[in-house]
Image 1 (cartoon, rainbow, N blue to C red):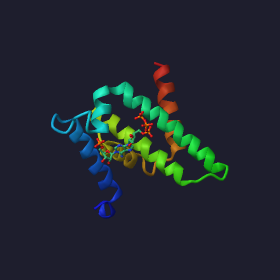
Image 2: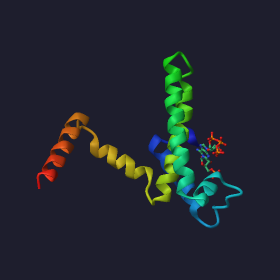
Image 3: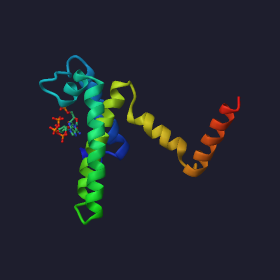
Image 4: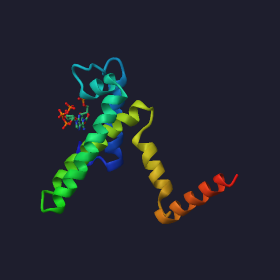
Amino acid sequence: MQDTLTSQDALAHLAAVIESRKAANGGDPEASYVARLLHKGPDAFLKKIGEEATEVVLAAKDADHGGDKTKIVYEMADLWFHSMVALAHYGLSPADVITELQRRLGTSGLEEKALRKAVAREAESK
Ligand SMILES: N=c1c2ncn([C@@H]3O[C@H](COP(=O)(O)OP(=O)(O)OP(=O)(O)O)[C@@H](O)[C@H]3O)c2ncn1[C@@H]1O[C@H](COP(=O)(O)O)[C@@H](O)[C@H]1O
């Protein structure tokens, strides 16, 4: 089934599984890693996000020195997964992030940075 899902559908499917772990009937911390993380609370999954981000950096640095690039994918998947648990906790979804990325499409990052600085200068001058 996973082969037939688009990337967006796969994220939505995983988000629905994570959401189901928040529900009383799917949320047994003894039977589900997601339920366990959610049960432990933000400190647990926010710490995992920090750890997994570091793992991504280490895998990338390793690849820079001839290491296996697929480790980056593996660690990035861990990072995305734990980030999705955080989104669910805060009542958000991958669709919210995708919407924001779509909003940014076509806007140069440099342009956006200059705009942000101009807005900050304007606020300071008031
Ligand atoms: N995508 C994932 C996923 N990616 C990573 N992990 C788990 O994340 C955990 C943490 O990874 P680590 O490498 O840091 O493992 P660790 O050293 O044991 O770390 P600690 O948890 O002890 O801190 C591991 O137990 C992984 O199995 C995931 N667990 C679940 N999912 C998805 O979530 C769904 C629901 O999972 P359950 O709630 O467990 O049924 C699954 O069907 C999957 O689709």
